[in-house]
Image 1 (cartoon, rainbow, N blue to C red):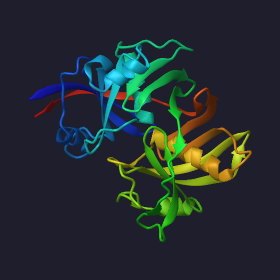
Image 2 (image 1 turned 90 degrees about the vertical axis):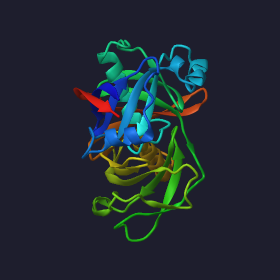
Image 3 (image 1 turned 90 degrees about the horizontal axis):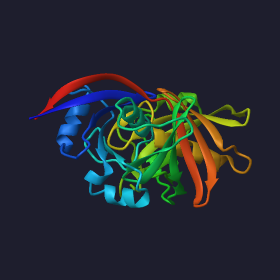
Length: 292
């Protein structure tokens, strides 16, 4: 039996159980993680995040080769226990956890490098909480048809990778977005090899206000089901909408999700265009649990 001291946190309602294991001594099974995330029999969360030093993990070798200052690794698992490459809301909450726990320091204007299975991600403080550079993105070329409960007919999806896989679907209006049932996993045809998060988006009217694009989004996250927000999915939804809007579409977006509003910004770098995500990160309460 293992007793874990944990913290519950969320970013725009996307919630996580976090615990510190600096030396990598705690190895939870997928079943144990799923039980922790169970909203009836466990703590309840969209995922579990372990704070572990990059040097204590096999995956951390690549992280430290990329950036030797990336001391901390965000070991993220979805609610079903499967490992996740990256989590945009999770990494902001993870940063808040590191700072409040005294594990790291981040002064205004400075950057904190965090290791993930998608590589190193840089986090800064922002007016709404934290901003994370999600890195380079690309169209995957996998544009499946998407079927979802109460959607009626299948819709075309746009495959986008922002460190993890997404398929974005445009809907006609708010009524259609509100009606779709995202409890069951949407069916993708063809199904991507590693699955995908699926985002459904509707542009606001007007689409652009003061140079900022505006959309609404709901999401079914791979391994977690429908969540109140998905950080990387928010970025993918904004990227897809800009792609569909064509030349003249803005690089700054506000994305309204059931849990609040998140910001997305696209910007050039030497290695190509990057996309960043900004939004709140809150720690709710601390507790202890026994894992058998």
